[in-house]
Image (cartoon, rainbow, N blue to C red; front, side, top):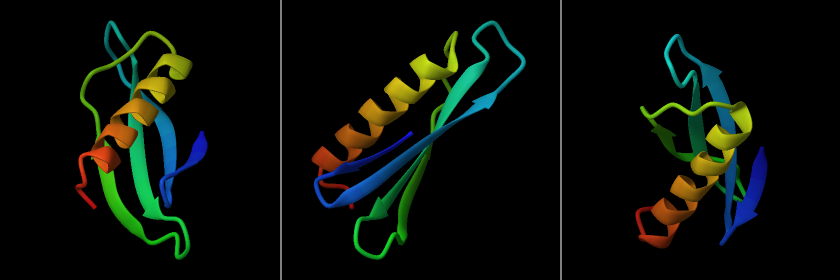
Length: 70
């Protein structure tokens, strides 16, 4: 999943893990113009489906941008 948000590009992929909640989001935040990687957020909490993990990853990334971290 990829989305543009406030001058950034957020790319969320999922990774399968061996656990009760196997899907974890991996979030990459880049500058929109250069696509230079600013931050990779690895989230340790797992989810039932890849779709759930992507949605949470997108939310986490937006909150990171809104907090003025970049």
